[in-house]
Length: 114
Length: 117
Image (cartoon, rainbow over all chains, first blue to last red; front, side, top):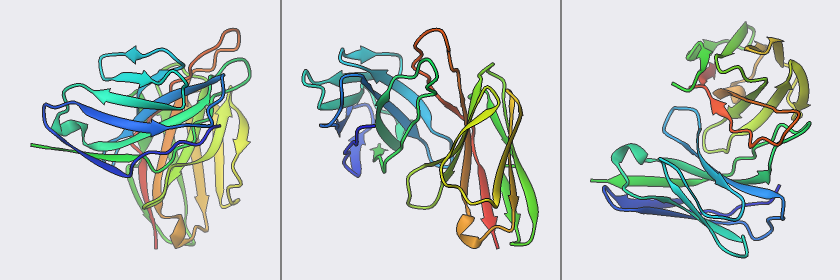
């Protein structure tokens, strides 16, 4: 699976958009970009994933550049409860006999402050 | 609530003890995972079970012994652990679809905080 690079930490004011970048310059054509987050002392939580088109769900938006070498996770209106470690993971989509292994890096510690 | 439960939530054990961690998923998934998260380190995948068969063992020491009696339950048996095994142990599950591609979102439990004295 392709390696990802994320800033170690970011700050965001409550109510503002949080934009979390991720570089994945060695991504291959069949690899997806996944985002998970881990709130302190809890298990990771799936947020969103995408291949090449931008994606949006009730939690966040995912913007993937045209060359797919980087992406940005957007939390449109950050709240204090969004303070967590955010992981960007690139891997092949599961299917057939593949269970879709996730390899977690260090992630970005997002701190949302009042 | 993610539909994945883990017990106990906290465990303190001596190096000579034998204990077991339990994971149960109520999501109808057919793949289950054990991860280890040590302080200041990324999550490390330990074991994967798919359809109750172990499909991956990431060079985990034999003092950790997994068991998957059915698709809803996963155990991690611990014996003669070392203090460096103290960590958060996380269980996850996902759905493996054999006949069609699946994005395979993983659902994690809250973890068991293990301390080895």
